[in-house]
Length: 524
Image 1 (tube, helix red, strand yellow):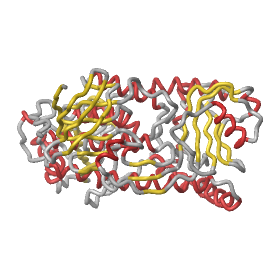
Image 2: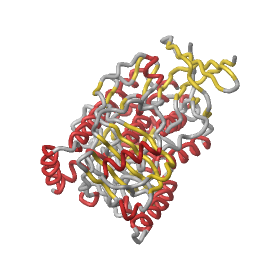
Image 3: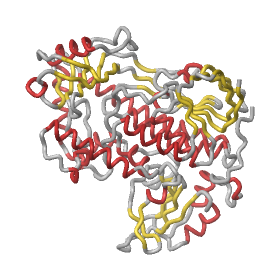
Image 4: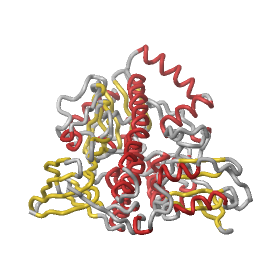
């Protein structure tokens, strides 16, 4: 029996858990990640990540890694589509996603067309996050299962078990990133209200006999349900509106996929092999609060919904970047515990809106004549400039706005990347955020920076003048890219208050910085 202490125990080494561990570490917290599986799950899951999640990774220096994965995916797609495969013009730059299988979201007509989804599948994402976590020295215990835990009010005691035996972990906080069937959520007693499932879905990578002759690439709605073939070679997506599966956890067989594919497509197609397959429903639920005492939830542990629009992975990654820097500030004694209340306040409404739009997408997929008429009207709306922007921004989330109590239109939004001038050299906002620090973009010739200098351990000050000499508004940007304060011209009202609100009292000692944090882990 070993006893250990850490600041935070993260349960689950999927994308949400790994990114949360990275964010906590950059903020100065000590982290141990517990993962039941001995190896990353290779079951087919998300095939891409949304604009905001991609930006979160780019801020942490993973842009080149994502670009490499996209080029590889573009080559595979072009082989399936028999296109040119020009890697300089990746299809992901134009594709804006879909709503209920209606592919009229035009990325080129969005208000911010450069904020696009990234063609990075979940396996590639997990690999690059695991590599970054390893580089940061984060301990990931694979093949280790959470047995039980207790929140004493002063800390959490977690009992784990692996091949070497039982262990007890003492931590200040525990975060469940352990998926839609979260053991953490159940054991901590979180309420999980929502709607029951109405469909059975499958996603798989298969070998088919004569696929090019029998199945066209793309999405189709049939009298039985919804299906898609491609763009990844051999990928099939099936949804049948006949109620939930009898046993969702049962292994997915070749016969099951073939029977469903033949029934929905109406085509005499044969599945000769199944490489990977998963089963899903449209069960939609969300916890009332993302925190109970010293136990928190992120990702699918906090909210589940159908996979339409590919929004679940992005929600989880953005939960991680919102929570990570805040929880690190609390466990390192830089900020009071009430800062954690803003995690639920900011993230809960965002997930609630995603649950609503996925329910709407399910309703628009139903195979009946009334839904036929409704889809025609929605498609007409989506073909309009304002319509494609509305649906594009809903699916991508780029118009997310946290209510921070400010009248400035930029405050509460998640900033995209933009060029900056730093001492005559060209840089970008995301370049300045790789180490997890906040950034003050100063368009006041140094007046704003003079105020922020008292928080220089946590906030990096950068001039807001690009190489053309243009200056925009001054912005205080949190580590999660949320704009916490903004001002046009020389008005600095509210800057001192915003800095104090998010980063604590001015002049905090160097010993309590993220690099040299004075931690008090696991006070149990």
